[in-house]
Image (cartoon, rainbow, N blue to C red):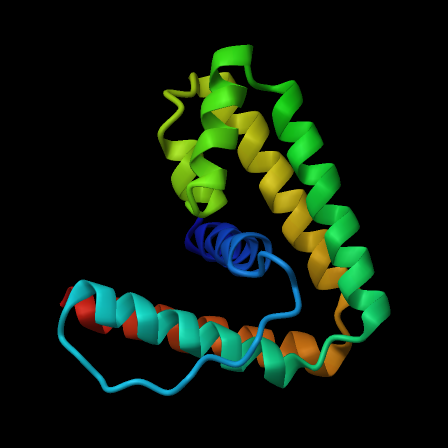
Length: 156
């Protein structure tokens, strides 16, 4: 049971990282910043960390194209599970700069919608992982493990 939970958590984390933190796939390198204790400073540090990580993956143009296609398909599938009001709100939240998972949390989804959308997110994360080379997947796994440990330590 615990292994199943770890696998699902890994998939969810991959989904978050690969489908919401990579808005255009090709991210410009952020300027360095001074560490700070504020929440905006931590968010800035996290964004820089993700940017640096994505550059380290060295995605090919073909991989970027495939990932964009997967992301477009994902949003179309999510659209099918939302009513008009929810879809409009999701688009508004995304245009305001919210990450997909944060925007989805604002929609008051019912249990069935939540299950279907989580399945779409998990499937798209696996498809995106499938576009990566073995070496890129190893880097991703190491990065996710480090982020998980960092998150655990900040909670404790």
